[in-house]
Length: 104
Image (cartoon, rainbow, N blue to C red; front, side, top):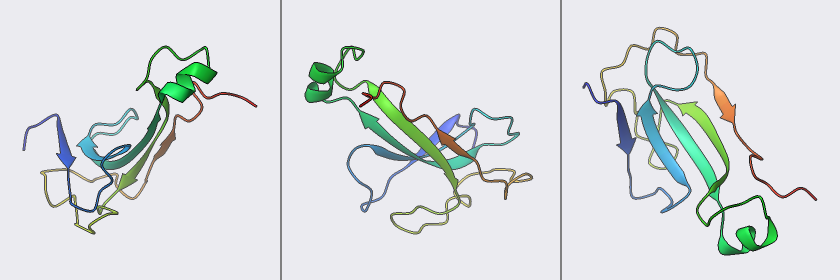
């Protein structure tokens, strides 16, 4: 498969704020990986409270966690694509929390 990215979807996955994505990450990986992405987007209330926020839907925080199976349906993901997992086993966790979070 020569796609730049692939989105896994299953019936058990929440309808918003969560994605399971196969793509190249921001690290120095030589292969694409499957990642669980969880993000919190600004609501109208967030924009009213925090003047640093510009619009509803703006990402407040986001984390990526490399995975091998879908946490919602249990499907083994790395069989779905042609990937080279030569350096797999060195799981990476990206924490982009607090980009625009209100501080108390």
